Length: 168
Image (cartoon, rainbow, N blue to C red; front, side, top):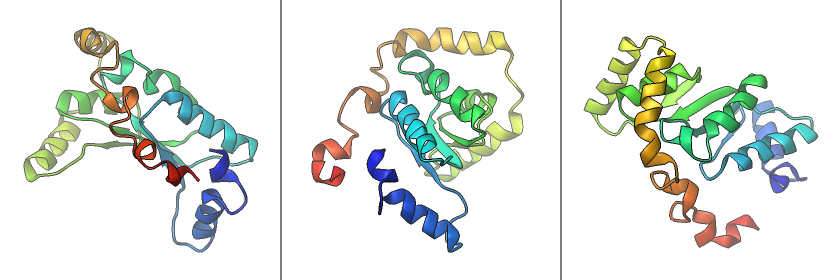
């Protein structure tokens, strides 16, 4: 985060692109640990900058282990950020929509998945608390140790571990 806000860092480049009309919004994403998101928001705040958007994995598994929903989502809402969540099948899409995200990213890779996303939006109604509780109760045994979210618990999806020079 400190390198991003440093002189000649990525934030300066993003702000220049915004001033030039090349981008409208500046945001960031990550999947490793909610503390990294919180640190990024804090470093930005110390530099008098507020991101426009934030993307994080929001799903019924996340709710149980190193939860972005519980730790980052309230902070993002307080900052009035556009919130983008990464999710899967219809019930999970409904769960994500129920969190008040600005956008839910479904990872559309085929026409049936696109049609599923349309069905999810067309059929969405706010979930009753008991429905959310049932979804979380069902997923808790599988998700409580992070084993279903390897991006949080391993280096498998972390390209910077395999390419440390990217960090400078």
